[in-house]
Amino acid sequence: MTEIIRTLRIASPSLFAPAREDREPSFWRRLLVAIMAGRQRKADEYLADYLQRHLDKGHDELRAAVKQRLADR
Image (cartoon, rainbow, N blue to C red; front, side, top):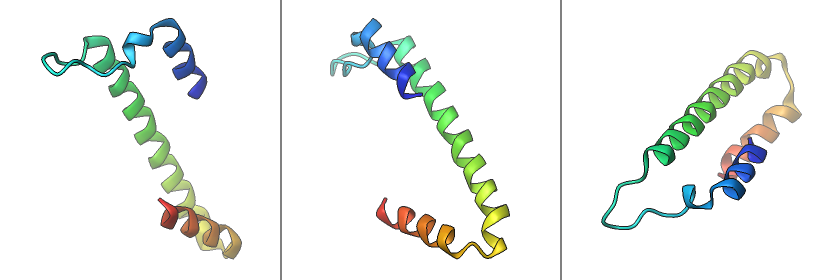
């Protein structure tokens, strides 16, 4: 995913530039933001489901690492 963002920034730097105060973000910027948000949401749901299924099996180290990462947010 980060490679896609880097490629888009190189190909179209204006896509990531902040919108002027008197304008709304462009169609392409809104589309890109919506796609990235959807992918992030799916990844979060997948990870939450995976952890829900596997953390109950007594993996204390994994459970502690996940709790630590969530606390660091």
